[in-house]
Image 1 (cartoon, rainbow, N blue to C red):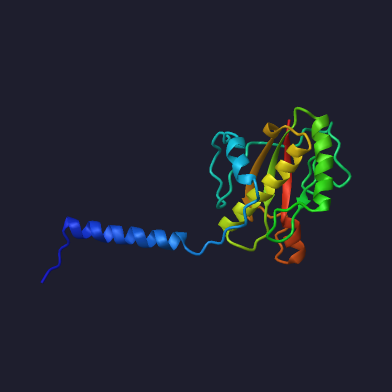
Image 2 (tube, rainbow, N blue to C red):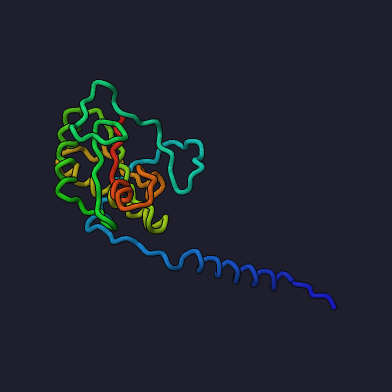
Length: 194
């Protein structure tokens, strides 16, 4: 006895497999809290994406155009970060995109520097520690980048000079797996281009 499947049977089997795959892909993902007011502003302030670059082999990371520090004529704040550049990183608490007092003070210095350098454009990178899912950390990284950007805009920096991007947990500053490393990796990093 031989079994044969007609076109109707194959179509039904395909639909069942598609529904099952969709349910598996969508289930169980925790979403970070949404910042109040961030949803309305985010749609109108998105800049056009950069021109396509060669594919990056790391998952869920968009390659940025060559954007470096403005050059040797810039003065770094006294607390400039270890990655170089004129603007220091700010840090966040676990599972939070809220700005602390130290972050606000640093962003105030950044706003002054940006006002003194009116041609500078900044990519505000949101980063997370290694804990949590890729999707959760990408969303939280974006909230961190937008939180820093909105604060700078509130201090008088033109919004079109600031581009938020999230790297989630994909580009750790410290690859160690401990509390000190996680604290260093929960940050917003500022990449300045002239």
